[in-house]
Length: 180
Image (cartoon, rainbow, N blue to C red):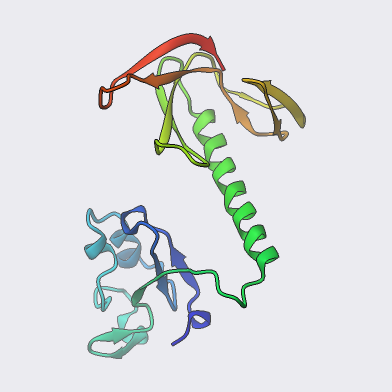
């Protein structure tokens, strides 16, 4: 079956740049419980004989319509570059929404982590929350570290202080007193 016959895609961090694809995403109790299993091998093991609806999804004893396959997305010469850029913007919008949810739950003194975008030598930035989270009352532009950022009405923000890594010391950080 081709990619267009699949209706569910999971970008599990345990697979790196690969994605898991499924033809029919089953959300029965047994299939949902698989996502809580500790290893990727257990989460995506085929066939799904423990599925509440296995008899309906069963193709034969070793295959089912709700089996997972590992795939890789690649840009081809036939790729519509505008659609590719739009999909990246959509993904970034989802990340922004998720980070807004993180800020909403921030407790003063607690530590948070933000994924690093762009060409960084680190994967994430750490921040210590210094204020109470608040919701942006209206769309506005805010200035931070000489850069302007657009924030939308309803997004959650929280003041904090960056934790800077100590050179030559793995997993050691120090705090400057500048709030962001």
